[in-house]
Amino acid sequence: MQRLAERHGGQPVGAMVPRVFRLADRRHDTVDTFTMMLEPTDGAPLEFVPGQFMMLSAFGVGEVPISVSGATNVPGPLQHTVRDVGAVTHALARTSVGELVGVRGPYGTGWDVADGAGGDVVLVAGGIGLAPLRPAMLEILHHRPRYGRVVLLYGTRSPEDVLFADELKRWENLGVEVLVTVDYGAPSWTGRVGLVTTLIARAGFDPRSSLALVCGPEIMMRFTATALIKRGVRPNKVRVSLERNMRCGVGLCGHCQYRELFVCLDGPVLPFARVAGLLGTREL
Ligand SMILES: Cc1cc2nc3c(=O)[nH]c(=O)nc-3n(C[C@H](O)[C@H](O)[C@H](O)COP(=O)(O)OP(=O)(O)OC[C@H]3O[C@@H](n4cnc5c(N)ncnc54)[C@H](O)[C@@H]3O)c2cc1C
Image 1 (cartoon, rainbow, N blue to C red):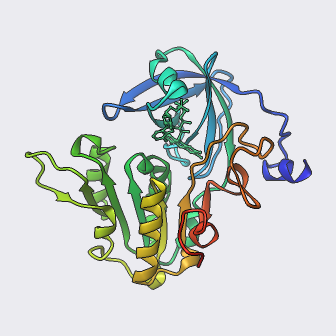
Image 2: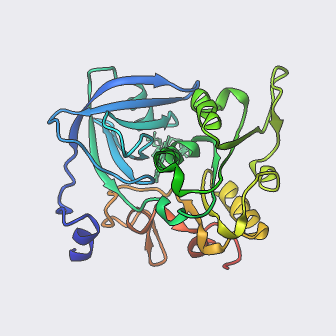
């Protein structure tokens, strides 16, 4: 219990009771994905680091882990970008502006973006995986002079699934190399078609000095991490964010346990080398 309390900055883990936030606004990003802007009803701001997640509850329905998708360094509502896939995410999608949502957290590990200072940073996102990486990108841009080249490789199923399209342009205008690819292009799509891994060879970064942050479906993270390491990125500089079935979020229930790891406490962000076996790769 002491270990858990320490991991939560001394906060009692008994704080399984969510804080109450109000849905201040909602943006529809794609046909099945939306961003919630949440404001605390008690007015006290909530601090987090990029990569951490919250347990969001739709009252009367259930609770789900969702990464923060907003910036750490600007005041404003807490942002979460959610794909509507099942019972709880659907209830969150149906929540009206002004209604209440429960928030526990922040929980878990962050991307530790500062570890990439002095070198290049490569962010690789698959689908909704761009949402947990967004705070990392915003943090890098906030401290732009500390980093070398910044690259975003982003793959989605179809052009309609591209998230944050306006922001991708803005990042490009700020000097980020943004390469987007889709699995299936529409006739009107003039961009790239193919897996996100095909972008790794094209992108301009020095692998030996790079920090790589990877978020997406597990198979995508496995092939991406392997390709990055093959290109020369050091294995201990490749990080992935794991999704596991989670209930408590604080290492008590064991739903997300993998060997000695509790993904909710030791993750979700972990060095690829530590979880390669879990992702089905021969361990490094
Ligand atoms: C640390 C962490 C961070 C996460 N961050 C985000 C995030 O930022 N945004 C986000 O949208 N999701 C995120 N997820 C995934 C999210 O928690 C699940 O989608 C959610 O728990 C599903 O709950 P539900 O009750 O809506 O669906 P359920 O009723 O539990 O599931 C309904 C159906 O959907 C399927 N399903 C469940 N999860 C997914 C999924 N991820 N993709 C496709 N099908 C699925 C199930 O297999 C089932 O068939 C995160 C998960 C973890 C562990």
